[in-house]
Length: 73
Image (tube, rainbow, N blue to C red; front, side, top):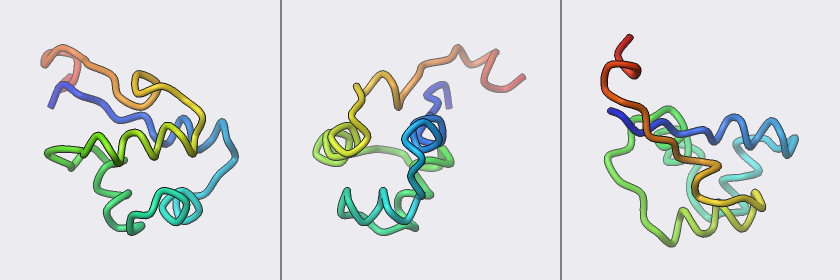
């Protein structure tokens, strides 16, 4: 998939654990793992907004588009 999720980058910058982020956003750690590992097929805007609020970032800091060639190689 050409959309890359950079939640790990923001977690490292904020020195926050996955568990803490999941709790503060209000989703399960398992659902957060699906999103951060790029296995999610969709993300609700409400969830994206909550992630941005907790991490104090913009959606573009969490999601990035890569051409198919770059993503597979």
